[in-house]
Length: 248
Image 1 (cartoon, rainbow, N blue to C red):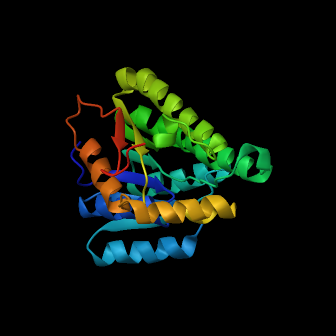
Image 2: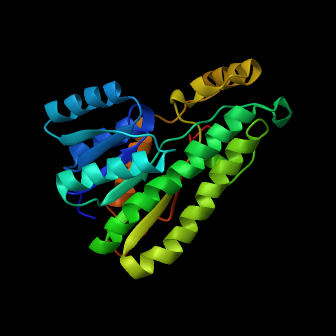
């Protein structure tokens, strides 16, 4: 895909991988819709992108609310007349053992990590179908292909994203020329660790940071650009991206 003058929506754009990817897309001439709940952060990012010569708008959006997602997608489409790229990046990763029974955290992960992807895909897909083109990138995880103690529900949500994304690719790529990529990162520096309420697991994650060099958000953004710029007949169906030092 030639990126200049394409239009993208990025969920979870207020920080981390989402913010880094939004900036990288704008650097390549993409008009970016920045979607998240934290509007003030989005507005700061919009200013940064515009100051660097790019184009972006802020979309206050809660991915767990289908109406909010539909409204944000409609605003982006009305502004630029097309949507070529959807990066479903919003996610949560609170870690705890299952017998801790943190039911509220479980439900929140299901709502954001799974339903958030479904809601956004449902909103953008009709637009891409009408265009007969597009690229959907869904953030799964190493936890979408392996399992780890403490990540029972998180792994379940990311396995769901991986399965859904691959079937989505099978169904829509041949009919509508819409590519689908599943992004599966290993350890990345991000705000995800801030969601951990279990003190023991939080301490373990902090120790892990001292043991190996984590991926940076910009590393993931570069990988996304790589997938998007592949020739139209090439679909990077999965990107499994690991720190060199991460053996598991």
